[in-house]
Every structure is written in C-alpha cells, then in structure tokens.
Image (cartoon, rainbow, N blue to C red):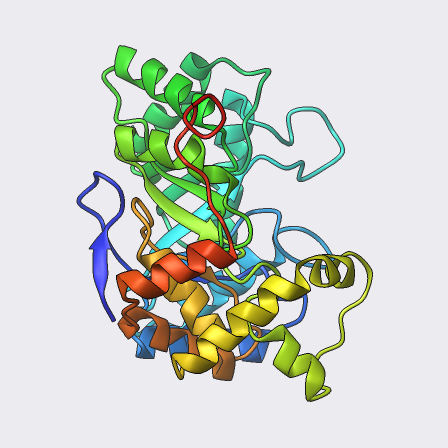
Length: 322
C-alpha cells in the first residue's frame, strides 16, 4: 500500500479509503468485521463513515465499528478514523445541521458509538447555509481543545463554500478544512470546474466518493452479458444513455489487460489533489480487487484516450468563457 499526506496536513493516509456505507445495508456485522480486518491486512489505514449510516436506524454503522475497535489488537490505533455530521438524527430541533449545539451533541454521540475518545477527521456532510462560519469554527476549536477531534473536513461543498470556510478560519487563525469529499469519477467530473481548483489552492486533499459511478465503471457490460448483474430504474437509464462510451471504455480496459474497476480507481489516483478514492466493498473478496489499482500506472496516451471517451472540464471560467 502507498501512503500520502491528507491535503496540506501532516496526516499520512493510505491511497485507498475504506467506505462503510454498506455496513448493515448489504453487509452484515460478521462480514463487516472481516472487511475491516482485511483492510488492515492490506495496510489500508483510512476508514470513512458517517453518523447517518446504518439501518434500521442511523448510527448502527458507527456502533459496529466501535465494537470492532473494542476487540483490541491496536485496531483503533492503526486507523485514521473519519466520520461526518449534518443529517437529522432525530425529529426534534437541533438534531441536525451545523449549529454549535448540534456539533457538540453529534460529536459526543459519535464518540460513544465508536467507542473512542477522539476522531481524526470530523467532516461536514453538507453545507449549512443557515449557520455562520464563525459559530461553526468556534465549536470545532472547542472540540480540538478538548482533544475530541484533530482535523476538519467538508463533503459535497462547492468551490465557493470552501473559499468562504477558509476565509473565516483564517480570520480566527484556525487551520480550517484539510479535505473535501466529493463525487468524482470518469463519468461525473463536474468538480473539475471549481471544486478541485479550490481544493488545490487551499491545500485540501480530495476524497472521491462513488469512484465507479454506482458500478457503471466496474465492467457492467461484461457482468450484464454473463448474467451476473442486472440494472433497473435510473441505473439502467444511465447505462443506456452512456452505453457507447462504456463499450469503448471496457474495450480499452481489455487492451490494457486490466479490470475496468481497477482502471477507474487508478485514473482517480492520477488526478491532482486526489488523496484516496473511497471504496465500499460489500465483501472482503471485493476488497482484494481494489488493491491492484494502487499499483496500476496509466500512460499519458491511456489518460488521453480516457479523456476522449469521458471528456472532462477545464478550470472555470475557461471551461465556458473562452
């Protein structure tokens, strides 16, 4: 496994981040434990979750991770733990968003579920347009002083949200954000307009989620042909719309003698500002495949062909102004 610093921080994280959203949805507790053990066996030290993850009620995923940490074996010490807050955790006021009150309550609740006394990376799952940044940063500064969190990150922010957050942090002589978690893959490249440039300028590491665009970049046509996968609804509509491009993509992967999912992850690892794509395996066997992507080197010619199949964006405003 390879490691890099998360943004401008001194925090070292693996080039793959283990996403846990499937835990309790499509992955039961024993298999979730095996997935996390397998991640450590592969030297993946970066785990991402959120307080809203889990069924039948939000919080179950953090609880399972806490039980896994409690088994010992330096599981917690070996893990760079990232979680998120924003979504409502109850029906009463102040049980969601980014008010100072909810930051305090949500953080303490996550710490309890995770059975740990600190979180390495505490992320805002969404922008809160109703809460001023001075209030948000004051609450985070208190949490840092208490030793409950080390770093702050954002998720699903626009470029100007990042700029506004960092300007407010600068006024307070506070570090501010060190990471941004956004949807980013060969098909969905909107963040190249302004989010990636903002992240690079402010020194944020980018953590892409949905790196395979819901499986469309994971060899969906071959799986469909073999009868191993059947899409429906919105996924099928997207596949039909992009079928010519995905056919070209899978043909290129065949030329490279590489699995489509590996190529999609490797492409992200070649992009500026990207720290670690989030992989969300449902089983420990699926985790094995993702490891290959870190070692896969794509030539400039291959990267150019991928850009031809799935065109990206120039930095704004050049993309649409001149």
